[in-house]
Amino acid sequence: METFHNGLANARRAVRTGDVDQAVLVAHRLWTGYGPYSVHMVNGLRELHKEITATSPSGEAASTLFEDAATALAGFGLLRQAEEEWKRCVEVWGRREAADPTDHNRFGYVAAIENLAGAFWARERQDRVVDCLDRSIACYDRWGWKGHRATAFRELGAVLLCAGRFEAAEQYAIIAEKQHDEVSAETGRTCLDEVKAHVLHARIAHARGRKFGARQSLNSARALAARLTPDRSAEIDFLIRSTRDGRKMPSVTTTFPIVEYGIVAEDLDDRD
Image 1 (tube, rainbow, N blue to C red):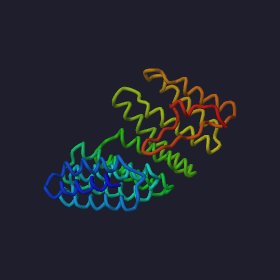
Image 2: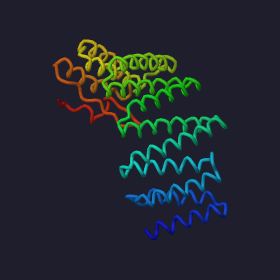
Image 3: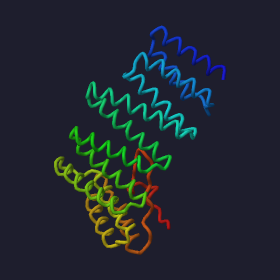
């Protein structure tokens, strides 16, 4: 505890002398080198954040601090506090993107939004996850980032599937399929994301009791997977056999901010 407080004092001294970079470096070490954190330690670090961001309110320093804080807090199970830090991170990146809309700042902004979605997911606030993904999609629309937009639609479909909202999930899966297909047509090559969109659609059809529709989507996924390097069609064959034999398809694996629906080894077990 004494070492922690010494570090906190050193960081505050660096802020007062104008050495913000050193203060951020010390704060990063404090967030990543200690824990579990007491309320007193968290409050001390948050006060340090205020001092640093008052000096550099919209700079890289502020966003780095909030990311460190959110990651550390979530790691120790302090999910509500982590959610608050991601909200602050979104605000900072939003200001940076508005002031200087470079690709770097745009990526930072949507990454913060999707990490906030992950925080909501961890607290089972699925309605807020949907809100965040809608916000990401609006950004991708505005910037003309078609591939990213298709991926966000696919993730939204997966979240709705996990929430049991099958009809809405299927609508988004269909949109994702079409948009991934368009991107592949423009680039002239098939990507794994396009395969995943068809697998997601199959999972939704299967959940709705439409086995034939599920197999159709899986056949489409297989044809696309065969074009990949290396060929991934054998993995789709497993899913096709599962539906043909009347077994349940492997469950959806959803871990925000990355959402996968198959085409990963751990999700291809033959389990009930």
